[in-house]
Length: 118
Image 1: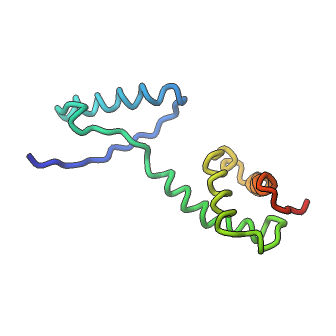
Image 2: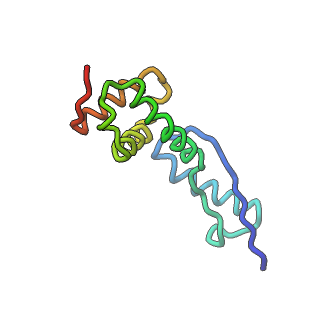
Image 3: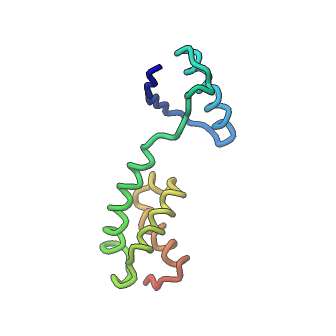
């Protein structure tokens, strides 16, 4: 029997509490539509749009640290950049207020005990 994989993407707004129930319901619905059993290969996973956001941030953060944040270049290391990108990914609400990204990065650097000028 030939196995084929298909990707189905849904964009929905849901609370974390709804996510598990929604995944189970969607998997069962897709399985029913294609006459499959859920156990036989229907999986629901997060979209790769998060990966695209991370790629953007990996380019944006070094630029902002060098051009907008009052910190010496010697403190801008790969680890610092990665930590800032991780912090932005974890608290992505700040990304919807583009002007607040610099303030967020400053507070993140201060939490890492790095010398950020006021």
